[in-house]
Length: 106
Image 1 (cartoon, rainbow, N blue to C red):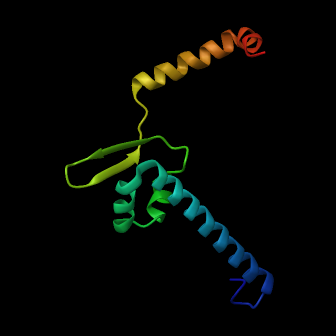
Image 2: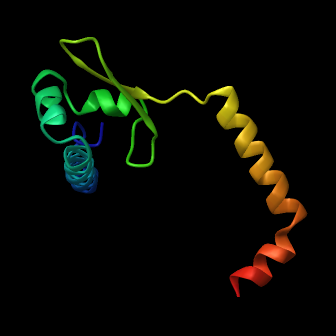
């Protein structure tokens, strides 16, 4: 819209956002390449980086990696019931023993 009505500042903001987004995509692609190597390189030949955005995959997202024998399948990991129980127990322990954990850390 700003470009259509000839506002220079709108165009400048658009260009800045474009470059920041591009840098972010490159950083994510480098991280994924370092984690999955050649398998990720083959994946990127078939899939655009924006797919990762659509799946809400970032460097902190736990992933399930599997194969059907012909293709590598990468998807966000779904929390299992066992993992949820572990995390609930961990939170309980942190609440209950926060002072003791703090003393141990000192």
